Image (cartoon, rainbow, N blue to C red; front, side):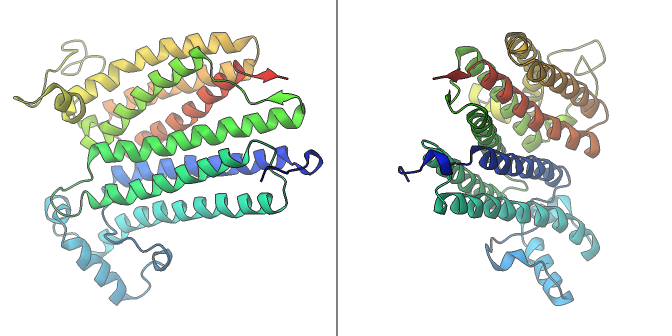
Amino acid sequence: MSSFSPNRERPRAIATWLWCVAVLIVAIVVVGGITRLTESGLSITEWKPLTGIVPPLTDAQWQAEFANYRKIPQYEAIHAGMTLGGFKSIFFWEYIHRLLGRVIGMAFALPLLWFAIRRQIPRGYWWRLVALFALGGLQGALGWIMVRSGLSVRTEVAPLLLAAHLLTALFTLSGIVWTALDLQALARDRRALPARLTGLGLAAGVILFVQLFYGALMAGLRAGFVSDTWPGMTGTFSTFFPGASQSGESIGHLLTDDPAIVHFIHRWWAWVVVVALVWLARAVRKTDRPASVAIHSAFGIQILLGIATVMTQVNIALAAFHQLVGALLVISVVWGAHAIGRRRA
């Protein structure tokens, strides 16, 4: 793959393809959020990579899927007495989630092979694209490991595995967006080099990563239901720190498995994120004003949606939009970090 000819390279076409994959990843992140909010993630208890593409079509097939679901602890704990019609509604979201995963895999693999066979991948990008594809495969594997964690003893998936599943998807999204931006720069100027990750870009990314991690734990622990007031957690202006909801646990356990503490950290770490992103946006403004506007807009809307989600006791529509804007915020931050790291030979 090292003998690509510059006159055959198609950086703009590859960038367009990567943006299409990024859109699909944003879609699966949103559907994954809805799947979690509707307690649908364990409705399909088996992983069938090929035959699972086709959903149940006959009444007998539906009854067999429903019988499998009734065997796991979640059914008795959360959905006891559910009708077949109710089961079909939760099955729908998990099926769409898995179907999107398969579509993303094909949407990445087939064009990658096409561009490689035609030797149209610019020099230095082949292994980066392969690594991104491998990350997508890892994310899918984590998804099944996550589902398995909730099929026997637990009544829901393990929150830390859910966080790993979501963060791997967002990290893959970040890599795809960064690579697409590099290729767009190369299409405009053949002397453009891949952007470097600056200290500011890295710091903003790490601070946002912490917030995304706790956002995933919020979903896994249903911590959004701990409080329906803001800014205080036990009243509009009363208690800001609720204290632990569990006792006798280690610090590590409290920081990752206590719903009240997780909610508190996610709620107030958001303002650390705001400071970091304002700093990033101001640095970006001189070189790429649209990126600066995108960062400000995304985190502003995200904060308002987060507050509204809490105060409505996790309204599903608001929570889904919160997850959508979270993915768009990741894209805007990658855009900004890339803008301040651009360089030219």
